Length: 318
Length: 308
Image (tube, rainbow over all chains, first blue to last red; front, side, top):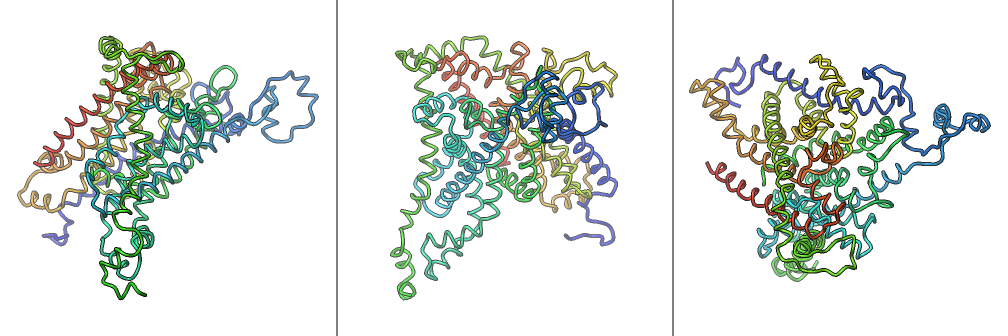
């Protein structure tokens, strides 16, 4: 950067005071933003009475009761009956008995969480694979009506989910796809593939054609050149696209609540239905929420650079 | 290798599939999937909107009813109330998110120490599930035990049990606006940040040489040059919030009464509770056309701004 006066900082560089004020405001905002998230975590390690005390407790004895309640179903028993049982075999057992209850069996949380994993990762893999192929096709070859097709692909994202949910519901019922993981994977893939094509086309456009042409002169076929030259170059773009697809599929609620009810239900429609005796069991809900948020938080932090690029890139392009 | 000996253009054509075949091979699966799961259902919805079909009675005889479903939807005052609720929600969320998001982007662009770390922290809410987190906000909004009411009363002295964010007709719409703003301001901020970073330094340097004040630079350079990005963020958020369903469903379910019943909730109620499939399809089409039409008008305006 050229500077007229070498001793002073550049004219566009803010002064230290400005920086300090800006920093303070941004950090304050960031701290306020994480309060609800911190509260979710704190609630997950509170006992049910602590979680609903007034004023809200910041200092309390942590317990795993919320997690116990999340992972199990319990039945209320008489103290005499509990006395007659053999000694508790686990911490959860003990905590449950102290509340005059016994563990009846595992809850549906892990199966629902497993469904979320299978459906989110399955659909992300499919959407990114299909998206990469289509993006390469649009980027490198003359496709008739390419612009129209690309606009058509994008416009499918403007539809409210509920609008297409009715016919999809009917269609899935017809083909036996309702409440199946396969049905949800196909649906999320279809929703995500439009974004994937747009993002990936931008990334592939940036890879010079000359690389593939050189490889083809060296004896590679077009497919080999795509596989061995283009794909390695597009890894960053593929990673960025994959996170976006994963975030959508992991978090989706509307389709999941309308199209799944039992065996293929994902975690988002399940977590709000966690109830204890006399209403929502908030520590258990918080525990379920915490576990559910962890994977996406880890992804966000590890891949934040690609993520920033993906968002800003999409913005610049469209 | 034989390929080396032949002219390259020949070699490319002879070995493996032709480019044309590859192009189709690569594009067709995506198109087929979109046709099957996006376009076909939409066409079906258009067809259903002209019938009296009910999804809970699949064996009943289906009759064409012409435009009657559309007439009913457009003449129903509830439709317009839902539209007004949606408009109120979209207007305030976009206004708040744009103002706060742009301000944050501007401050982050001062590049203070640690700005990258704090940007990541601010981004966290937008990565999370609106349904799962929205559900937890219901707890934060509890009148006696909720953290939100406690913090408000801590700073204002209003007793925490004297107001119910989700149960009061006047406050419930704002409860939803607060959560949406909390969640999506980072998104607007990111796009604004991309806009601010796209302004080349030399423009500011030139302004400095001309002794333009910081205030003047902000209004004559920063805002106009970042405007296309701000407008883009408004478009994306507008489309998303027009379709808003999950967060509202879990926070209030449309209540109290129907004060927070945005269009998607009305649609869900008609389609999956009253099972008026034909009528709800007509409503869905009306909504889709409205989003599509508004988005197109807006994009035209956006292109005009870009060309300036």
